[in-house]
Length: 345
Image 1: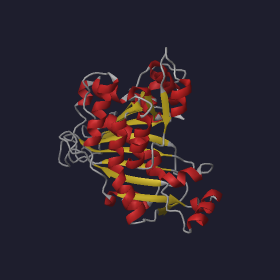
Image 2 (image 1 turned 135 degrees about the horizontal axis):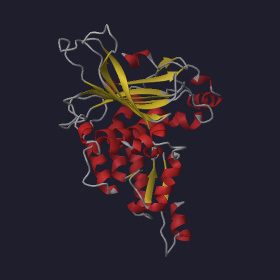
Image 3 (image 1 turned 135 degrees about the vertical axis):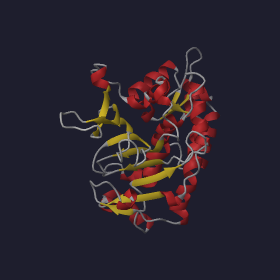
Image 4 (image 1 turned 30 degrees about the horizontal axis):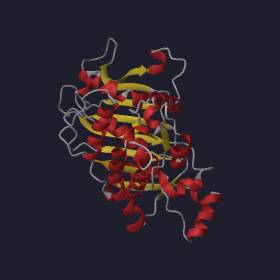
């Protein structure tokens, strides 16, 4: 298709840009082959690998949150943070796209691309400027510092009823065995750098769960039990990407009232609801924003080739272990639950 575009549709006066939709291959080898084939006809600045999560309003706000608010940015460090949780939940199953999904699974469909892009924006250092290439350089740096995932740090699940889908039954007959495709996965990732040393990044994604949401939860370290206010819950900075975009900070506050003592504190929430605060009637849909960016030639919110290859480097060994070496059977979980019990251990 790209060859035909280049041969028959290329403009000699204006600009030409090609949007490439995921999946960008099933593994690093296929992704490299795809990139190599594209470079026969396109330069990198003409190639826009689209990932609609990068245009979600709160994902676009991550850089601003961290680097425009200097005092907040300093908290993003292993000195203060106990863990970072990036969670994607869908309440629906795979009905209508089971054939596609069964060949990819939740790790390829959601984690390796959408959630890894969110992770890079949470963990990256400040770029030299807000020019697209400077931002993407820092994202690649983060990816290079992430260890490949240890299979022991992974739980995969499949919801009850998945095998009953008509398309899955056909695929099972063709393969001769029940599908081992995960509809849920939880993994732990570690970055080998000074800022994030020892901080687990816990990534979860699943379908047929109890709710529909995508959340980044940054949990701060607890105060020691014998500190001034005793044993209290952890503070958290929560970024709700969808639905109802919001940023809120769970902190401790003194309870009001005549009889309350100095040590009577309770966790409360500082809340920023973007739509209410800025009186927005609507925020642009992700694809709306991305198509606008392509027309403008803005590549901040698109995936560069080296980003893609580094993301596959992190996930390829895990996928090979699960699918080829172990042939791991996913844990079962009830449709509408939180996922496999083992993932909460």
